[in-house]
Image 1 (cartoon, rainbow, N blue to C red):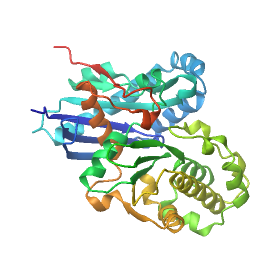
Image 2: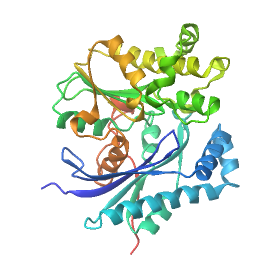
Image 3: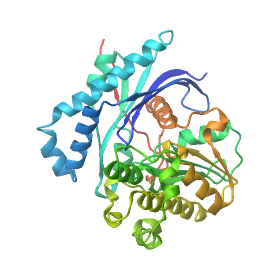
Image 4: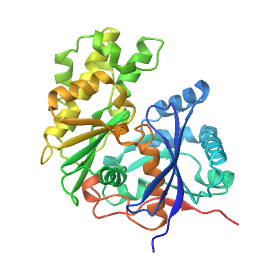
Length: 368
């Protein structure tokens, strides 16, 4: 008989805007019930401190040097996550959550150099919440030859099964970086980062205006994309590299568009996201019958409409199937926490390039 566990997943992505929290009930296999989802926004001061810390770290050596003088940022991030846990658990007090899946905040992702760094104090979070915490999901994958990312495909596969999508099919998550989960058939699963998602667009808008993002792609619609700049972006060897593959936001910069207007820059960067996603889809073994979009970037109407026109395929937002596209990643890490706790693999050769199906996650049990 399968054992069902309640798990709370926490995710703070590359946008560094806040923490997504999701409670699910699952056996770590095919049964998943979503209990609740909540979003908690970072205050301006904490967000700024996190951004400054990440910007200062460009290598493992930088991180080791800086963290010795900035360890309070780890505590601040952990305390914020503990506050998140307290609020969502208080709202769902009739449920006893067994596990917390704590992704932490990514500082550096350098699988080609053999490491990835996420910060957050799992022992402290376990103590503050009196709950077993699972974290460090990516390290073991990298130690076994993988990219350490993307880690959401096994959960994406569950979603595709729940909505009865017939392979070949795909889920595209447009977060700071866009990633694709491709199900060629019921057994064959592949995933990789296709290229930039929202990260460059958001960064450009913040630098050029007093707003945080291009709502609905309205600024992009008013601009003209610079085709030469897009072509130059696409010369990067990453886009010819075979999957599995993954990116760090520090692989991306705005240098080439610095002289464009706000609107033209938005149009150029938005079309870069469009072109890299379409290029990735066109190079799959078989074109998907249906493509589903999740993540914040699914709300960018300009990007989604352009993808529809280029691919001419059946395209849907995951929200059309009673899944909230803002919380797929936090749900995924709740699910991965259960799999980790039950000693089940969380990544595959086709999803991260790992040598063999790989377990992951470090477990910090409550000490009675």
